[in-house]
Amino acid sequence: MQYFVGVDLGTSSVRALVTDSDGMQRAVAGAQYDVLIPRQGWAEQDPEEWYTKTCAVIREAVQKSGVPAEEIAAVSFSGQMHGLVALREDGTPAQNAILWLDQRSGEAIDEIYTLLGREWVAQRTQNAIAAGFLLASLYWAKTRAPAFYRAIRWVFLPKDYIKYRLCGAIVTDYSDAAGSLAFDNAQLAWSDELLDRLGIAREIFPQVLPSTAVVGTVSPQAAGLTGLSTRTAVVNGGADQCMQAVGNGMVRPGEFASNIGTAGQISTLASAPVYDPLNRTNTFAHVVPGCWNVMGACLNSGISRRWISKDILMETDYQALDAGVAQVPPGSGGLIFLPYLTGERTPHMDAKARGMFCGLTLKHGRMELERAVMEGVVFALKDCLNLLLSLGLPCERIVAAGGGARSNVWLQMQADIFERPVFRSASSEQACLGAALTAAVGYGAFESFEQACKTCVRPSTETFYPNEKNAAVYREAYEIFRALYPANKALFARLGALEGR
Image (cartoon, rainbow, N blue to C red; front, top):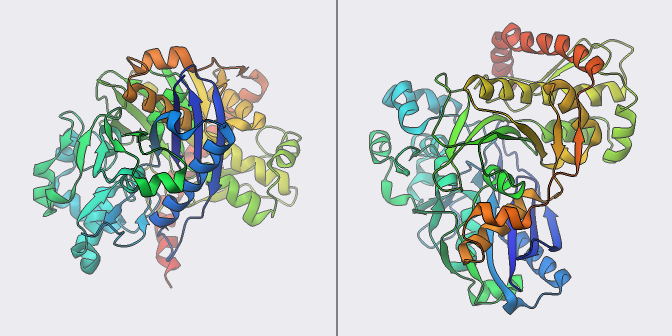
């Protein structure tokens, strides 16, 4: 029997899973960390904290599994996307990582488009440039933080730093490279022309290899910290959205993932680099060879619920909150929430967008606020779903992913608002499982992702069907939701100007 470890480096936590080549999950461990907000609109994390906690959760998972270290064949990774991790010549971080939800590069994006042109960028990257993406953050550093920029020898995506610390490899994969926006999605290579026109050195970018490439073995120092063997292979890994798809067995067109994590996404696999001509979606190379991940991305999904629950209502028992929310009728008594707390990507691509409650009255209480936030998150995901469908992408089924899939109330909202059945995955650790299967494919235990998923991914265990009465309420509420952003766009920009005063 062969064993594999999958690591998911998320925005709020890191998790590790040990599984065998039959798909039996032997152990899981996790640890949380915070997003650092040194200034309004900035979002950072310490890569060293990532590594320390990753080593700890791998060690815990391995110990809990009872599997001897020498029998763990390979480890691979799923990682939060887009963020900038910059290393000095000596391999230490030049500063904290700039995360995907960071908005500091908003003004720099206009300069990038002036230099490159919007159509030129879209043709080469199949995406719009947005704040929080590695390219935008790197250009911000070049033009606004020159001392930081001069210190940079290498730039990575978040999970690549963990890989570097485990085995010393300076490498990324196609799916994460594509999410940097310095990458030509169609040619599957760094865009030398793009970097040259921005005056950014090509030499600071790592080698790009398939997600299943074996890039080294665990170093003696890392073995001591993780409990792995120095013979354990380190497999390249990939972006978290792709890994969640693999962990759900979604490796062919027609299957959509509705993910509610810290952020939220509606995504699907495509056999060509399909993209929205208005640049409201994202198209990135997939970990599955010859395929692309097409995605609508919302910045504020699980983080919106965490904000209303923990910071406003002072409650962290989500089961109790769900029970209370279930007693509130759909529509939250005429209360609608725009979940744009840190700006928004799909469909508005507006770093200045802001959150808001609309319709507040004296009759609204704690649970109406909680439910309105949850509904607003799903309305935003429906914007993404509608956009992907407008591109002609087939939707045969929707599988719920991320932490939001643990909430029956949220799953029923998705079915009612999408007006489609929503399936819950049998695994609660989809991204970790996807990473573990990537390790297995890279090690040679399976010939392909399709074979690995057929063997190891259990079918969906529950289905949530739309309730027509609820759906009718949500149709009307969704139309109001859609009208709120354009009606308030100019005011959001004015409010943003007040934040610094």
